[in-house]
Length: 242
Image 1: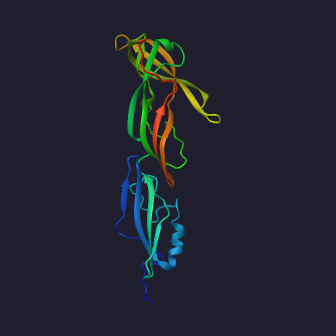
Image 2: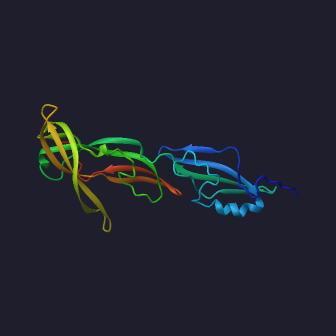
Image 3: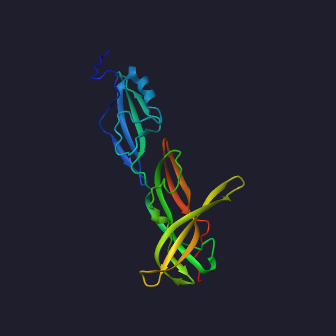
């Protein structure tokens, strides 16, 4: 029987050939082969369970760690050594990527709805998130300016908007199914118009629904998920003459 000499007794050693794959959502996968003596395989097998950290501490290019998924492949070579092929997932960014903006026109919920419309962005994109994360505007790392209205129309005429400020908000629940409700937030926007491009002429206060984030597609990778996200607003309609 061959004698095995170990530089570090019982160690799990990373072999050359580490590979890294990145995805459009910011998800990344690292594949690495490790080797150990077969007599120590049971100890390392337990350490390589799904959800544990990559064993050698090399988390590049992930920003918050690499988590093992799925269970490693294992080969007992017959020469006293056992190999583990380990895959682990992480994410390279904490912000939504591949963002697509779609202009949509909205009639304000309250006030002079029949006199006015205003434009907003609907948002589509991809994101890698830790499993169990809430999906909201802050989680997605989006620019808050994407919430603001633009291209306001009043009495059917294009108006020059001098500034937009966000005021108080109110909320209510809407029924999506017999047992499911969604919380809708109505946010106040004070849209300041100008006639000379410099000085404010009047202010229009409107209440508009915040976007609701909808997961169009989701894939699970152990401790992380990859999601396709779209937004929608309750009060959305095509622009008509006013």
